[in-house]
Amino acid sequence: MAVEGFVFFILNLLIQYRFFMDNWFTKCPQTTVRDEDEDVAAERQRVYDGASKTDILQIRDLSKTYVGRKRAAVDRICVGVPAGECFGLLGVNGAGKTTTFKMLTGDSDVSSGEATVAGYSILTEILDVHQNMGYCPQFEAIDELLTGREHLYLYARLRGVPECEIPRVTEWGIQKLGLTEYAGRCAGTYSGGNKRKLSTAIAMIGCPALVLLDEPTTGMDPHSRRFLWNAIMSVIQDGRAVVLTSHSMEECEALCTRLAIMVNGTFKCLGTIQHLKYKFGDGYVVTMKMKAARAGVSLDLEPVESFMESSFPGCVQREKHYNTLQYEIASSSLARIFQLVVANKERLSIEDYSVSQTTLDQVFVNFAKQQTAEDEDATLNKRTAGRRKDVKILPLQRRTQKQRDDGHVEFRAANELCGVDLTLVSCSCGALDEADELISAAVGEQ
Ligand SMILES: Nc1ncnc2c1ncn2[C@@H]1O[C@H](COP(=O)(O)OP(=O)(O)OP(=O)(O)O)[C@@H](O)[C@H]1O
Ligand SMILES: [Mg+2]
Image 1 (spheres, rainbow, N blue to C red):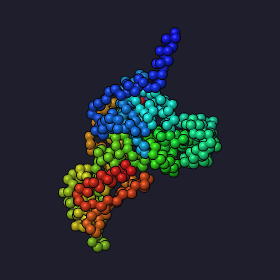
Image 2: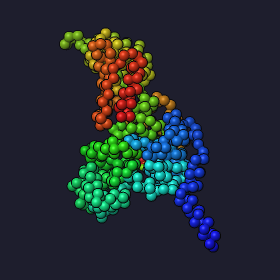
Image 3: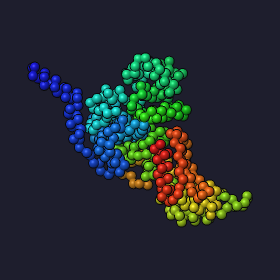
Image 4: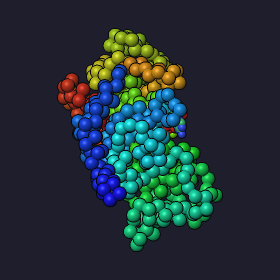
């Protein structure tokens, strides 16, 4: 009995100090997933190589198969989320987003794989993980009889905020999410939107290193949504990390530095918004406004039309009004479009022009089709996405370009929400390519 006791005590200590886990994980086999997108595979390799070790969240081959289900709800996903990043997890209903969150929070058992939050394992150090993580679940986990303020007090205590700091931290949460008016009322009487705000405030209280937000703005009015976006931005600017799921592409475009689209529990693509638009989007829409020679004289658009057809074979004319032409160009780079239009601007009497890109909606919708079509995985070919034709210019992003007197083109990219403001001046064709990339980096990646 004494020997048994001693052996089990030692075993207990070894488990507590992760002896088996550490040895096991270092020998963890590396998975190869067939037909995986190259960016998803590159992220997987980054995690395998240990390059994401310093990331706040590191997920390695995380999988979940529910009891009685044949197909995995989450299937060997790998990603690292560094400090200062808002990572978007997109996917249609049933793609596996909430299941991923539930595994990270310890609400659901992990079938295989591992994840760490601020260096703590979700398998062996879940209490430390909880200290470093805030979670806004998809469905409210609030006590109907407690007031908003009481909730924040409770969670601040649970997260280890020093007693003397709790009132200040609680008021910060109330103000940050615009709950001042309702803070003293029982949460059971809150509207849906206010419950979401309270859940988000709970996730943010105590400044955790990682904030997981599962559809935080569902049911929120536009003003409250903007309020919440600012709160999320402040978390990122604080050098912490956010993982966000949302069905609003506008929200993802405004907040996410990188995102992944999930289909059937796997990542189908991963990268910055700009990169995904470029890779899976339907190209660009060029709108040109022509100068009238004299008022009342009708314009001859024929030279511009033949210029477009010869310069961009396969381009599609979408609109033709009195002095305006709009084309969709699928097979050219932004740099080449700028280069040709700028070079021929005077000759063709183009007064003004703009180039806009496929929206994230279009990219998403095409991935979404894959999940509804059938259970099996299918790979999306580059540029087969984005068949929907309505293109909009993002409200929070500005991109302008102008020809300078010295013949160079000046590009300006700005994302007001992220505070990015970048100006580039072209000097050669190479620089135009570079400008393309830099604009993408600035607007998409902050
Ligand atoms: N408790 C459960 N038992 C069995 N299957 C489950 C359970 N919870 C989720 N699933 C299944 O796992 C898959 C992923 O579900 P999950 O809730 O993670 O999707 P989601 O991406 O969050 O979807 P939504 O956008 O609707 O919130 C679905 O097929 C779902 O039916
Ligand atoms: Mg969900």
